[in-house]
Image (cartoon, rainbow, N blue to C red):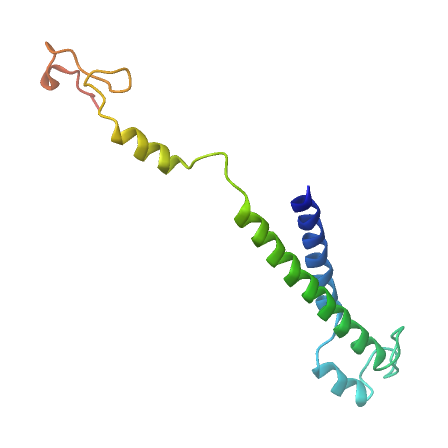
Length: 125
């Protein structure tokens, strides 16, 4: 239950962080706005003011990055302490190869002793 909640928070924070990074404009955009090449004829059209938006956005991104880091570490810690109920396919293969099965069991296809490989029908192609 805790893992599910942490995973949902982790995904929402990741999506929010990507959105905030994409909304922010680069450092080079400020130089163009200073010479009148910005939106609305060089006047800053942001809700937070000329410098307020970059400060708000960068702080929000920092907070989300910190939460993302904490949830990542928490999920890794919880995953380390869980025991797996299933074993891997490789473990099963190694376990079955350790047992010496007698020849001719149902798992091993065998030719009858009176049929040789040379007597098998040949593919005409």
